[in-house]
Amino acid sequence: MKDAFGAPQSLLVLGGSSEIGLATARRLVGLRTRTVWLAGRPSPALENGAAQLRDLGAVVHIVDFDALAPDTHETALDKVFAEGDIDMVLLAFGLLGHQERDEVEPMSALRVAQTNYTGAVSASLICANALRRQGYGSLVVLSSVAGERARRANFIYGSSKAGLDAFTQGLGDALHGSGVHVMIVRPGFVRTRMTAGMEEAPLATTPQAVADAIVTGLRRRTETVWVPGALRYVMSGLRHVPRSVFRRLPV
Image (cartoon, rainbow, N blue to C red):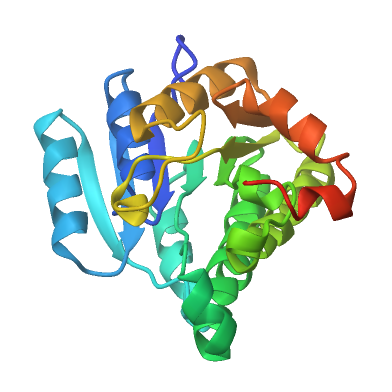
């Protein structure tokens, strides 16, 4: 259960080596979160992230989890919930891909879609059902402003996030009244390993800023969080630009 300050006592991060996921976990551990489950494929980044959280005083468990193997999700995640209730699930995994390559290599594009959408749908439903049985908890899903309107520069990634965003909105409606809080997080360009070497977009942000926004959204039980907040108004305008004009914009 959440403590008197509204901080979750237990956290499951799907995509345990995600920089945003780990930044959020560190922030929450600083606010009295005591147990963290990091679910991901074995890697030095996953082990290092677990070590950092342990140094902060958290009890950390590592779970083998592969977004591209949905047939294994139920077994892996059921084991986590069998150990005790989870106050918060953060779905933080995702794959940016390489637009130019993915347009001519359909299997590469499929990998982006399966990671960002199919894998996320599977894991979200399993966790949502477990949270519903608990009768409480938060499911936080990292979407992206890229899903608000597909751009020529990254429409494969953007379309996968658009699907995830729509799915999460529907899931939130389905869980309304169950005691489970569903929150969509829509960051803009985030400075991470995934975006290293890319030209920064306006209003670029950091994993730490996204983590802070998530914590604030949890406290307020917000349904949608934009990072930075100004992107809400930028995307509201871009959403209504005629397509013939939009395709010529340098976005």
